[in-house]
Image (cartoon, rainbow, N blue to C red; front, side, top):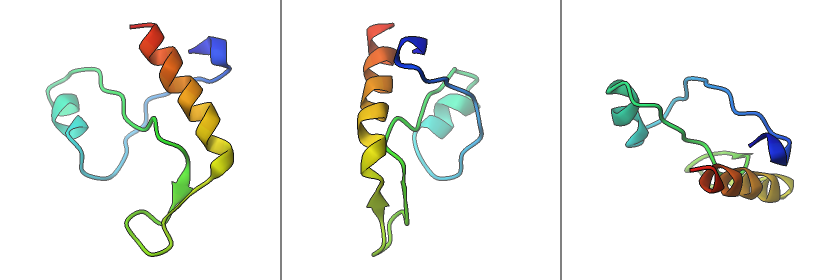
Amino acid sequence: ISRVGQQVTGVPAPGAADTNLTAAAGLPTLDGFGPGGGGAHAATEHVRLPTVSARAALLAAALHGV
């Protein structure tokens, strides 16, 4: 992942996802590969377009390393 110039750090995140189940079971869990934005599930929900390509590169690098 360092080859795309990004670092991955662990932080707790709110919300509901199946990743809560795997993390609770003690399994290393990654979530949050989507682009930045705000207003989740509201009329003002949006994506910050400049974050899309960087997040796609991060996901590709993670998958390539598997």
